[in-house]
Amino acid sequence: MIFADRVALPVHINSANYFPTPLNDSCYSLVRSVVKKEGILEAVSAMRATNKEIAHIALFYSRPQETWYKSCYTDVGEPDATEFATMHYDHGSEVVKMLVYLNEVTEENGPFTVLPASKKLPESITQMTIYKYLHEEIDKVKNMFDIKSNYWRWFLKDMQFRKHFMALPSPIRGTSQFGDDVLDDSPLADYLRENVLVVTSKIGNCFVFSGDRNIHRGGVVKKGERWALQVLFTPKSKKDHYVDRVKKNIKKLLRK
Ligand SMILES: [Fe+2]
Image 1 (tube, helix red, strand yellow):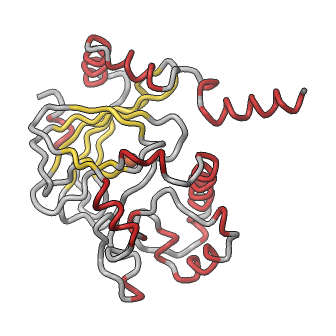
Image 2 (image 1 turned 90 degrees about the horizontal axis):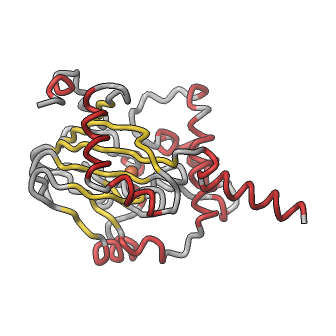
């Protein structure tokens, strides 16, 4: 198997394990030729009417021992992980991904889960974009804090930081990575329970999704393990990125 050498890499049980592959090696060439031949590249380009290219390929390995999404609020007596832990929108504004299951995936071993009604939720794209950039900006000051945790939203592990976060004006006080904040007995959890689509499958099947516009998660394993290949597509040209297009349109409007 062409990816066998990746499997020998050290595996970190406390974080999501992913093994990127250089875009100039044999894995990339193989994946690139398959997505081109099967019309997948053409299809993902049609999704947002922008020519896409592969920007990243990685193997993902998930298993139950991972702790990167657990125990955010255990200091105030909340459970280790919520039912919808890790549900999120991807950062970025033009994120189209393909996931290939490399083993059989059941409800137990980390199925991809998506909320097909994501677009109907009240948050505007602008508001969600603010949440994403807020998170990215906060990440830039991580070195200023003595936080030992490997928790993925590190700043919310810290009570002081939570207080600062809650002091933000409500229209911008939010996060695109909200699953760990949804209490299991809340109306939002009921809504998710009724509306999410859980993608289980035999080995070798694949699907494509827009990660920046659809609430989703994958790889939260209760039992067993999951191997998946993820291929990220982004616009070929920087000018095709949504945020850049918005900036361009605003400039045009201001000139009128
Ligand atoms: Fe994602």
